[in-house]
Image (tube, rainbow, N blue to C red):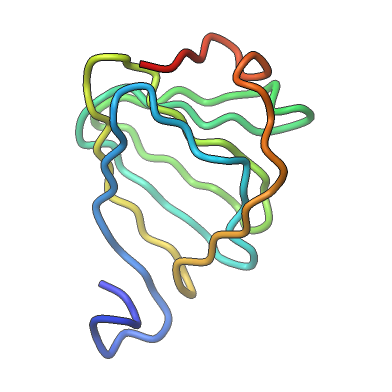
Length: 111
């Protein structure tokens, strides 16, 4: 559900699937507040100075990402997809930041 596909003007809501070992670029969502619910898999959100802090998520977990918070989203499994529902207001804003080496992210590995 998005402004591109419905009359909605103040929310983006969708299912996101991340392949095994996937990780995003460092980014933030501008003024948008983001909420997520994990349907399947093991995810991690890295944040803080040098992305040294993290929050692990598994099926049934909820997560909130505040506006303007730089973070990296990762699928911590190298064999299974990470599937989650995400809602964001006012829309699906994504501001990519400078990339960091994989080694910066504790315990992360690519598939």
